[in-house]
Length: 112
Image (tube, rainbow, N blue to C red; front, side, top):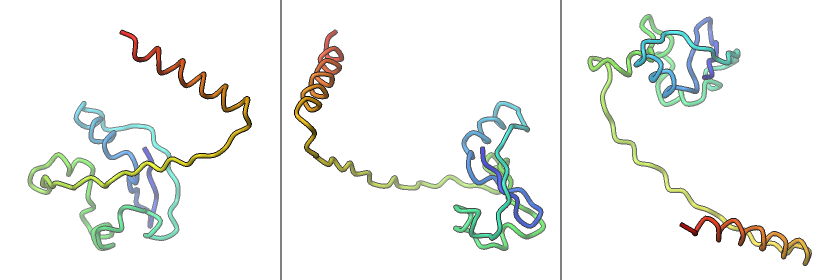
């Protein structure tokens, strides 16, 4: 998990799923990588909420994800993924070697 310190407060910036999973198992403490953020923009994904949401008296907590009074379910559509395959010419012996190795691995995978 990754935590950033900004204006004297700690913000979880990576590892939300792990943090929620630990909370569901009754764990309240876990090791994390902590670094200082110089600007609010350095907090990354936090930018989808106004800065006031993070500087007020009541900060959002990971436990809020589990509290129906302050959270809600939302459907977030997945983003499309594309695979780009780039062909390149390799020296003759290397090409044959790579092909034979690939063929050997995949033919074994197909056997029951």
